[in-house]
Image (tube, rainbow over all chains, first blue to last red; front, side, top):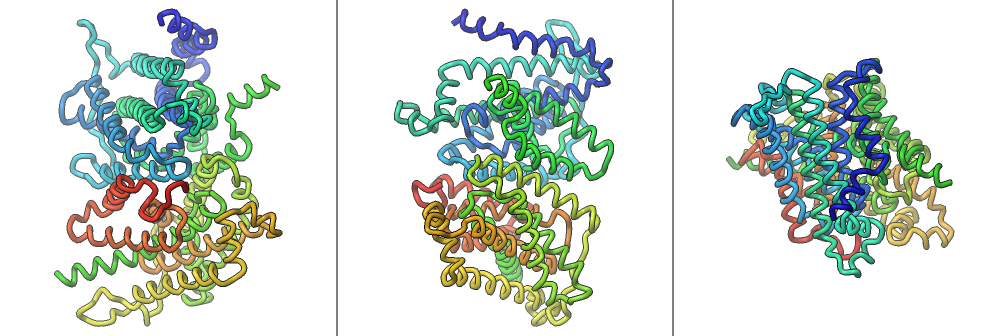
Length: 320
Length: 288
């Protein structure tokens, strides 16, 4: 088991990726980036990677992940605002809220497939959107939830000021990214992950081999939504704000397009897709007010010309 | 109190009629082509705005006839360009592409007609209340119900008695065999898409007369239409009609008791239905 873990952790491409992410502060400003942008990429990348855990590795079409991202964000924000001024407690509550919601919705959807699964996940996502949108007195309604700030954290007597030092908050996010991505990576290499792949490739055969499909899909769904809500909670900390549009179905679509753009069949594709998407949206929205049209056009173009995503295309070239 | 209940019940039924028109169009396309058309709401909004634009020339009645046809014509341009490429592919791609289209529609509507709400003028004959006691029962509301009923009956007659309808029903059942028997399924899918979009455009004109025009009009009507389809199960058109009315009525009645929950209640209904019958009330075991 230990040897297996070491093998998983020290593969060459992993070392390159982690060196790249860890060394970010050294070269970031030189290439014209800034912390809030890369931290945003990291957080959205985490959400997209979590979505891909379901979409790419289990073959289940979820179009409702925005809801759990938003629940994480609001869980975190409300905790800091009303309960206790602690960033870590906020994260914890955010994750619990998102995961519990997913665990409850889960049994209702695990028997559905394909378009039907997608429609039902979108529709259930809207429940949480409307609750946040309507419950003005607590959530701030349409204006969003403000009035809370991330606080410095205390670790063994030391104060780490993630509130004011943006670089430290980047590393704080990276730590959670690493933990969550590492956990998902290890799960995918474990028998559980193999079962997920089997379900994706041939569900009927997997069932005949004795896998309890519904239980596996439920578990993958809950893990995926749980990590997504972690990303949402981090997002609330990053912006010191939670927006109801984070729960809206349009944002679910954006998470899916990030995943598809990077490459659904690869673990790291979604992070790459998130990076491209965020940079693109940033660039477009600084040039034109009609960025929605361009994002829409981008959706269409990706579907027509890059359905396998960037990593998928590269891999195909290598094989050919 | 009775008035309040009647008012909300009627309101719910009318809203339900919109949902039903939308859901019928979505179902037609989904059943034959396997594509969930997320941009359906965009077509609906466009139908309303087109009616607003041509109304000064052709009047309300002319707009009611022409705007849905124009919308359907646009649908028949978009289908061969974009939608056709999605047939037979993973539903993921059809959702993403029509998502993108919905974004484009909303943004271009805002660019062309502005973000401000616009009213669609309704003829004076229809705008009056029918009686002083039932003040909310304007002629327009009754007229809308009549138009929706006519459209739905016409749709079912077309599906039942015309050659096109026969082919659509057969294609829903087994498209490959229909193709082998010599029917051009490209044209069939195009016509079917146009028919679905026509219904969206018609709903758009009617909705514009009641709710006023806003770029987000269609986006707010599409999700309940989804729920209507899910609640009764995919595949049955009469079921879809009932589902739309049911969802609308539930929304209307909840408004009396607990107004802020009126949007959430339909998802609660959906959850309850899925708990008991995962494939919807009328859905058959084994079908998608």
